Structure formats: structure tokens, C-alpha cells
Image 1 (cartoon, rainbow, N blue to C red):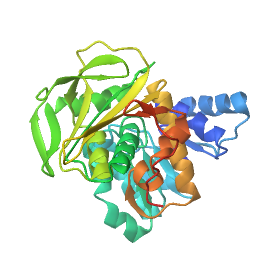
Image 2 (image 1 turned 60 degrees about the vertical axis):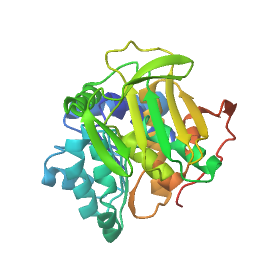
Image 3 (image 1 turned 90 degrees about the vertical axis):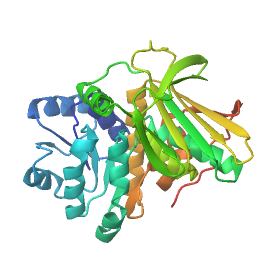
Image 4 (image 1 turned 135 degrees about the horizontal axis):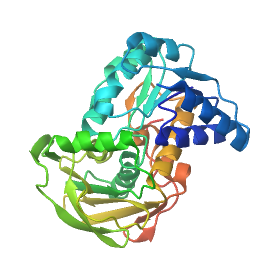
Amino acid sequence: MLLLGAAGNSGRLIAAELAARGLSVRLAGRRRGPLEDLARALSAADGATTAGVRTVEAGDAASLAGVIAGVRLVLSTIGPFARQAGPVIDACLAAGVPYVDIANEWAAVRGLLDRGDQARAHGVTLVTGAGFGPAATETLVLRLAGQMGTVPGLVRVAAAAEVAHRSDGVRQTIQESLSQGVAMTYRDGQVVREALGRGATVLTFGGAQRQMLPGPVGDLETARLASGAANVVAYIADPAAPGSGTGSWAWAEATGPDGQTFTAELRLGEGVRATAAIAAETARRVLAGARPGAWTPGQLFGAGLVTDATGAEVAVDGQPAVPGMPAGGMR
């Protein structure tokens, strides 16, 4: 398989997770030197043998076609995905190669999911949001929806990541999302755009009060699809608020038609490492066989994916969740 952006912070961690799963990885990026350094580090750490290194310009169709030729799957870490994912997806469709990314921008996640007909026509599996944030809140919503046994009237989700090192790519992705100055929600099944900061609130999860605001993140789309709810809000941490430093947490709340509310929380360690494990496990399962189309990780592999990949702790209404229940997914 091919790992795009392998020498970046997320890429290096994903490469290690892929190697730990026994997958042969071709490392790709803009500069050969860091890729070769990574290949040597992987070999020294656990004896992993990579499938070589290749330089690539992600915006150049010919360069992408050359590096994708002969691989079984492409896993992309190159953001901002709203700008960078399109050409890579196009190249994967043309080559008939499955694609997985770690996008967490609403526009990127929705954009990939809107390409389901194209993916099925080419017999290709496309997966987006395979990282902390979208996948973590999605697993909680799947569990709540399964427990409720009905479509919620309102779903709210939030994620707060503890990150040891925020890479330039992650910073650019966050800045691009927030630079639009738009808060997005679903109301009565329609996307509503308002000024960023509108709807700001304080949520309590992970044992801390957190200043949050609705944001244009991928969680908004994955929560809507996982629940079927017409009203969905996805919160992000207020950039001006101090971090809690208590690990990475995801939170979800679902309110039924009768007004009864259910909540769930998920705890992980460092956020980028969690993303690496989720992305690598998603890629492994896609390689093992997944139906063509455009999907989220939870749509394909159910609520158990994130806990299987990371060992995350999940509680529903304050009680430890039964592992893998309900699993959901579309196998």
C-alpha cells in the first residue's frame, strides 16, 4: 500500500502502526531524504521492510498516477483535505485503487461521501474521517442510536484532543476550517451556516468543563449519518480557551422524540497516536475486503472499530460499554 505524506508527524506514526500490522508500505512525500530516514527508523525499530520510497507532487496528476501504479491501497495524510484530497481521489478512481484519509473538515468529508456513485462505478472503496474526531464521535453515536432503537430528534457531539505536537499540516487544516468564520449545524435536515462563535457553550465531559463552539468539522457529517437525525451539532474546543491536559476525549448526546437524553464518552491517549491507530486499522480492514462506495469508518466496520484499534474506554450513561456492542456497520 501507499502512504502519502509519510514523513509528516501523522504519517510517521501511521507508518509505524501499519508496519506493526504486518503491512508492506510504500512511503511517499515531497522530499526523499525524510522518507529514507523514516524507512531506516522503521527497520531499526521493529525490522519492518518498506516497499520503497517515492517522491510525489500531490497536485500533479501524472506524478500521482506514477506513484499509485501497482499499489493495493492509498492512505493519505495530506491536508488541508478540502483542497488536497480531490486530485488523489481522482487518481485512485482512475487506477481502481481503494483510498483512505484522516480528514476532519466538513467540506472534505462531505465531498468524499458525495462521490459514492463514482466509487461504485469504478468498483473502488473510498473512506474518509479515519482519525480521532470523526471516527471517535461516530462510534459513540452508533452506540447511542443502537441503544435507543429509534432515530434521535437531536444529536450533539464534541471532541477534545490532547496533542503532544501539532504539525504544520494540522495547523493549516484547522486554520483553513476556522478562517471561513462559519459555524455549521444541521437543522431539520438542512445545513445552516452562521457566524463562528454563534452557539458557543460549555460542555462537561472527561471530568472537565470545556468551552466549545459549533464548527465546520467532519464530525457533523459522520454523526448525522450514524444517527439519521435531522438536527445535529458538532462542537470543537474554543481556540481561545486553555486546554485541559486530561487526555483525548469524545462525547456524544442523543435526544429522543420523547425528550429522553442519552450520553456517551470515549477516552483515548494522545490524539495523533490515536488517529494513527484508527487509520492503520481502517486500511488493514479495507485491504481485507470492503464494498465499493464512499464511506465513513463506522459505516463499513461498525462501532467496534475505534475500540479495537486503540483500546479506548467507552461509557454510555456513565456505565462502561459492552465491548463491540452494538457493532453496526455495513459489511
